[in-house]
Structure formats: structure tokens, C-alpha cells
Amino acid sequence: MTSERQTRFWIGAFAAFFFLLWLLSDVLFPFVAGIGLAYLLDPVADKLEEWKWPRWVASAVLTLLTVLTVVAALLLVIPLLQSQLVEFSTRVPDYLGALRGHATELIATVQSHLTDADINALKQKVSGAAGPDLIAWVGRVLGKIWGGGVALLNLLSLLVITPIVMFYLLRDWDQIVDTVNGWLPQKYAAIIRDQVSEVNSVLSAFVRGQFTVCIVLGVFYAVGLSAIGLEFGFIIGFGTGLISFVPYFGMLVGFVAGVGVAIAQFGEWQPIVLVGAVFVVGQFLEGNFVTPKLVGDKIGLHPVWIIFALLAGGAVFGFTGILLAIPAAAVIGVLSRFGIVQYKKSAAYLESDPDNEAR
Image 1 (cartoon, one colour):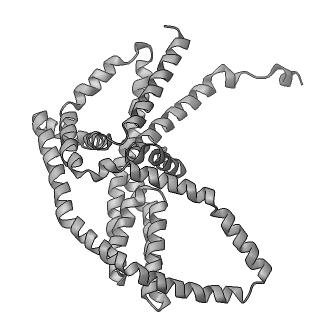
Image 2 (tube, helix red, strand yellow):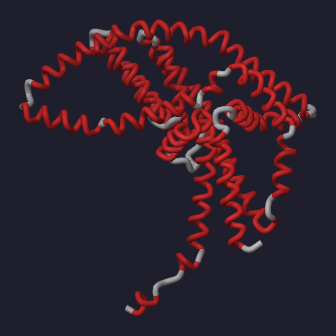
Image 3 (cartoon, helix red, strand yellow):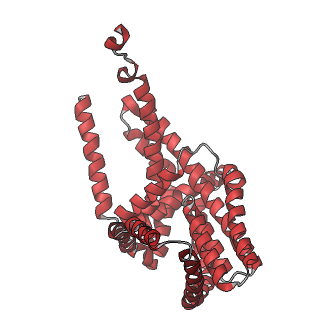
């Protein structure tokens, strides 16, 4: 097979794969969740196997512990969060009313220092920045994510299919890796193995480390906000930690929600400042201590690239796309760096222009 035919073959194979992924995205969620859990727990299974545990026993025990953990969360944590969410939803009109009153006072103060021309220009800029095109685009993205969340809402498939997929993949993980390794084209097998190893290093550092970071931040924000006395501080703080895998977005959402509730709840500025300080301190600790220690600073995934990957994955494949976004971002990032290295070694980069040398 010539190089050109090989290129066409792989392009066609990847195109067919992504088309199939898009076609089945609504039902793939429990399978992708099972694959992700098997990947995360494979090192634990390997360690148990080193301790003379049969592989199937280690896989069964890890699967059972995962199911028990999920069930315990559903029975213990979910009702608490649900009750707080219900109570919070009933308080939202009161919060909005209080915020509207503060905003009215602020607007009156600002208007007293602006002319009519300044106010009209400000309105035009705001309407242009949040025009109908932007709102429609956000609506389409959220609608696609919600539409692709049918599998997420189907708890039966998550509680039944996901553990089965996780167990069999965890049990046969090494065999699957060996089988796929045998399919590699011999000419490029070593190169492909090196890139897969790099992808695995990036994913291991990011996914396993970031999960721990989210839990640590969630506990910190929940304890800090609750200690200040912020209403619904636990759910705001812990929720902020859980969505902190999206760089800066999680902290920003939590900051807006926490400060908004603080403004509506407290009549003094000191508690509001303390609420803001909790998020500032949390962001400082995350950036300087927690993330460098648990994740590392050489994962090769830029925050902007992660945000784009999550938005793109959610817009195209729904919740399944969100799960696949980080692995896909890691693969593309590793392959891009490999491509740049190869480009800098090629004649296209190294050859000089004879006309420029003559000058």
C-alpha cells in the first residue's frame, strides 16, 4: 500500500469513527463512563494483581466498591443536596428582589454622573456584546447538551450497564492493550507506542489529579462559606469545587453565586468581602500549591484548550462529548506537538530560500 493510499485509508477510518460516534452519542454515555472508570482504576487493579489477587477478583471488588460508593452518594449526599437545591430555588425570587434593589440604587448613583449620550452609548455596547446571535449560540449549545443527557438521566442504564462494562474492561484491560498493540502497522509501531504513552501520561496527570483537586477545593469552599454563615454555603462551595475541572469557569460561577447570595443576605460589607476572600484564597491555593502538587505543571493542556474542548464536545456530542473532551484534547495536543517536532526536522522547515541567501 502506497503512502497516499495509507493516508486516504486512515482519514476514511477516522471519519467513519466520528460519524458513528455522533450517530450513537445519545446511548454511549454509560459505555463511555464504564471505559473511563476502568481506565482510572486499572493501576489499582494492577497493584492488587501484584499482591497475588486474581485479576477477575480485583476487578469484581473494585467494581463492587464503585457501585457501593455511587449508591451511598445517591442515598446520603443527593437527598441533602436536593433539599438544599429545592430550598434555594424557593429563595431565588427573594435574592433577585434584594439584588434588584441594590442594583437600582447603584444605577441611580451611576446615572447621576453620566449624561444621556453616555447612557445610550453604554446600552448600545451592551446590546451588541450580548446580541441575539450570541444568545442563540449559547442556547443551541445548552440545548444540545441537555438533549444528549438522556443517557445521563437514565439511571437504570448507568447503574446496570456501566458496572458491567467496567468489570469486563477492567478484567481484560491488559489483553485488550496487547491485542490492539498487535494491530499496529509494524513500520510505525514504535512511534505510535511512544505517542500513546505520552497521551496516557497526560491523561493520568490531568484526570486522576484533577479529580482530587476538585474534591479538595469543594471541601475548602464548602467549609469556608459555611463558616462565614452564608446561606446554602455548602452546596455553593461543593458545587464550585466539582465544576473546577473547567479552568477558571468553576471559580467564576461559584464567586458570582456566592457573592450574589451574600449581597442579598447580609446588610454589611464585611461578610461580602469574606465570601469573596474565600474564593480568592481558594484560587490562590489551587494555582500555587494544590494543582502543581496533585496534577503537575507539565500536562501540556492549556486552560483555553480545555475550555474549548469541553464546549465543542458538549455542543457536538452532548454529555458523551463532555466525557470524551479531555481525552480528545490530550490526544490532539500530543499529536500536535509530535507534528511540530517532525515539521521542524523536515525539509519544508530546514531548507533555506536561495534568493534570500544571494541577497
